[in-house]
Image (cartoon, rainbow over all chains, first blue to last red):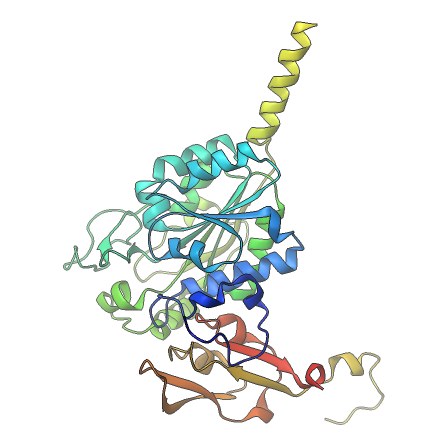
Length: 281
Length: 88
């Protein structure tokens, strides 16, 4: 344990477990700003922190559950969404936030992701996408862009990656957005908007991984990746998710892609209950 | 800048001097705050932290407008910007 704070009362510190700071994330890791945006979004949205539960899977981003002073749950690999579904059905008052990485949500938990979106479970998913499996040593994953290098693809990745917003939007999510960690203000607003919106909300957050992905792709420092975000990102709200795939050096389309209304799992369940009770009479 | 009349919102839009506090225990020297400060008020110092990271430091406090970008961009939650009004 380090002595908490030589500085005064920080705004995010009230929602962080100070006894665990400094955290284990590498120098220049993008997960820190994303957690900061999440804690600020709780404040700006005016939601009661006691009614928010944070569920995370395994991986670097999954560590976020241990650093926040909320009801949090660090689940098994890829199974953050099923655990959250159970939590939501057990206590429908809870506002659920799933904070996890691309390796957890899209790779091993890919099936759970599309089915949670299909059911339109009332939850907010914050997916930190750093294009590789960071915690296990930088292996290529299903989000690694074509021709990008990683420890398991030293000659460049030959597999086509997932276009995650397209996948989730096609499965039936009601809110889909993508931001990089450089777009801190937009990310904060987006998280606040997604948390107050009923239905399945998905936010993809592109984050630098200087230690593994960046080092293999000529961006050895977090700052290099941030500069590439600054040059390459194009804000295009309402863009068709089909057109927002990420190349290793092409433009990165960010913004809010989908914002629709659809009955949630809980609404449909209540309709069914009403119908079943009517028949009995 | 010379103004021909006093703006209605001058009091609330006036630049207030702010203070940037950096937690030396937490800073890992990634340089995001130094690079993205719109006023160039921060600088990488030669000082090393107890873990051996190069620390960020405030170069010129008078340049700071208190926008708080360094505060929200810091991956280590190590920066806190306070306006001097609140302190007093």
